[in-house]
Image (tube, rainbow, N blue to C red; front, side):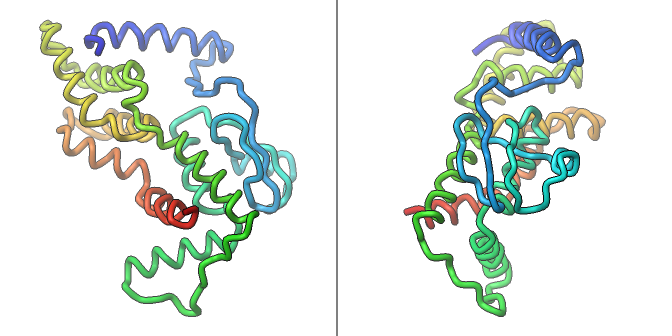
Length: 236
């Protein structure tokens, strides 16, 4: 695990490389240049690289109606990843599946079956393929940050730097990064990045680890996690 100073140095190098890659715009990109995904009739049909999305602005710009054939691009920011995660358990699924998932949420929240009752979609080959593809994309977006510890250390270092938590004690800084890294490792990077931004922009002082984790959970999206579990059950 890198020290806080090493993490900050790594962040600086990453930011510089990102600016060069994006023509000096300073935009941080998670794209690795792999192929995008295509969707037809509101259903994901193929993904050959990381999970992908189409923004509402892009859809308007190219004049595609809802449900038409679209080509989607890899998410580049935490916000785009969050939106895509929501869409993967929503409008990018077959309508019957999306409606059933929504009905299950109502049932779990109220304890009552929605009326009219929405039956579970038939497990046709096409439905299984759509669910499998959505789950594959979700697993990429929701990948635990522990699998990318150097990047996670950078995000934690950015949070510490924003609240000026430097003590001059390198060992203590490294221990702080290690503790936070261990507790945040189960969560996806996009949610941690969003929580960092919320804290920096909205808090007067450094949040506690427990408070920060609560924000990370909120950033992931309860609907996403619950629907992911339902899709996994549907795919068995």
